Image 1 (spheres, rainbow, N blue to C red):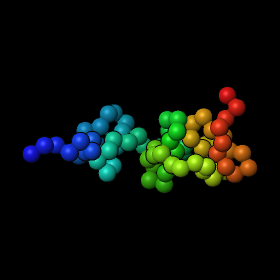
Image 2: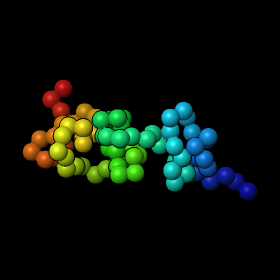
Image 3: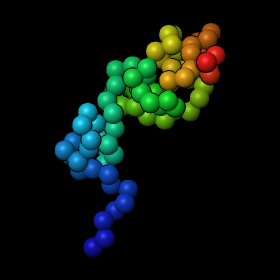
Length: 79
């Protein structure tokens, strides 16, 4: 029986240090979007995930890395 390539993990032990196994994928836990890699945002479950832009925000920390909060929307930063 061949392994399913979409299954990255079965438990947290299968993931790199600091990651959690969620829905068979290793994910980095987060508290705010600033803690996520560029292009990812922190969801309500504490997971860094891809979200469809534009995102709404109250502060820059609500936006993915490289973006800032302008008039309630995450936009590309000036840098």
